[in-house]
Amino acid sequence: MKKDIHPNYVDCKVTCACGNSFTIKSIKPEMSIDICNECHPFFTGSERTVDTAGRIDKFKKKYNLS
Image 1 (cartoon, rainbow, N blue to C red):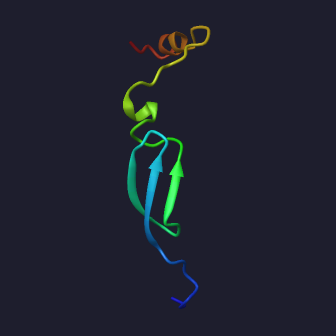
Image 2 (image 1 turned 45 degrees about the horizontal axis):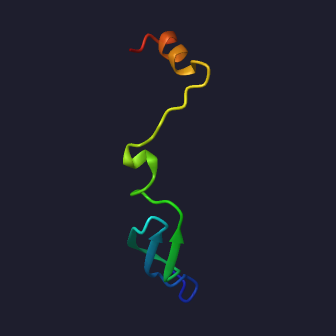
């Protein structure tokens, strides 16, 4: 590899809006994010399915799902 052309990776402290923080490797020493795995609805289990005009029921009926 060529010398002096690659970025310098450092430990990066990532802070979420919910207050969670963790450390990763990056070229920046600090990052601030809006949503993380601790507060995202998909990972927390508080995800809701919005059924518009019975589309989920129609899909289940079409493919014989329970």
